[in-house]
Amino acid sequence: MCAAVYVLSTVTGYVLTSALLLKCPNLLHRKKRETFVSKHISHRGGAGENLENTMMAFKHAVDVGTDMLELDCHLTKDEQVVVSHDGDLQRTCGIDTNISDVTYAELPPYLCRLGVTFQRECICEGGEDKRIPLLRDVFDAFPNTPVNIDIKVNNDTLIKKVSELVVKYDRAHLTVWGNASNQIVRKCYKENPHIPVLFSLPRVLQLLGLFYTGLLPFVPIKEQFLEIPMPSIITNLLMRKALFDHLTARGIQVYIWVLNDEDDFQRAFDLGATGVMTDFPTKLKDFMDRNSLSKAE
Image (cartoon, rainbow, N blue to C red; front, side, top):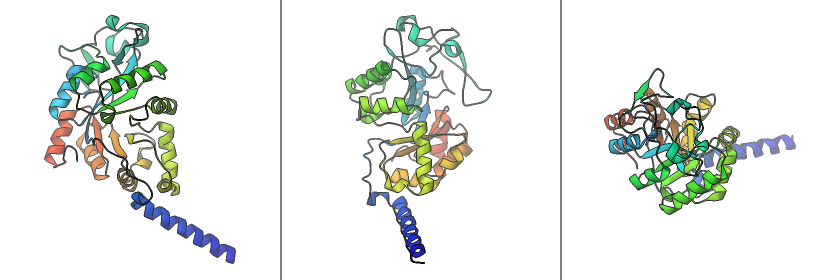
């Protein structure tokens, strides 16, 4: 009987403490310093309105009023950091070769028409700008715009060079980087712990386990940004307002990607997501303006 009472009281104490810290995490954890907050994020610069990952796309998104540019990086044969989602140039340029096998000067232009990955039966037709840009081009053109960098390959030189560019342009406070791979994220953090990192997929799964067992409020978190893909198998488990509120109270921003219709925009913001990543920056901006959603708080 005494043992049962002890177990019951211990479990009750754990549940109550967990619930309290879930609601008020700053009782245990210091809130992370937020140098920027992004509600409007342009996926590949807005792949539904301009050719993805081009300077024209990035300029359009910034002109619309985006809070953050999302892009992807690879390394050329002559070790130039370029902005491109695919390592293979077949889909984007019509040439069966890898970025890593050619120099920057040898890179072909983008095709005139590209499919929008996250929008069915949608083709984006490009304008005059079909050049694959350098990451430094983006940093030069948009010195005050936060940039979300997906390190596409597990390459130590790529990680080092991206870090060097971030330091050179003094924008660690305006950059977040990472990948779904835990190994890449660990290397990024080791290379430059001053640049905030994204949750890798294994860490997202760990986050889920901690949340549903009540352990999350007790555990320190090094990541500062959580990106949730939608739709996905884990989306329904992650789309919890209590989780979003807890993370944001700890200074961890929550982004939902890639959303391209207004019902999804509304659902994400209703659940307390910090921001939405979209292929259609104009559509998202119009939605936010109509619904009095401030650009960034």
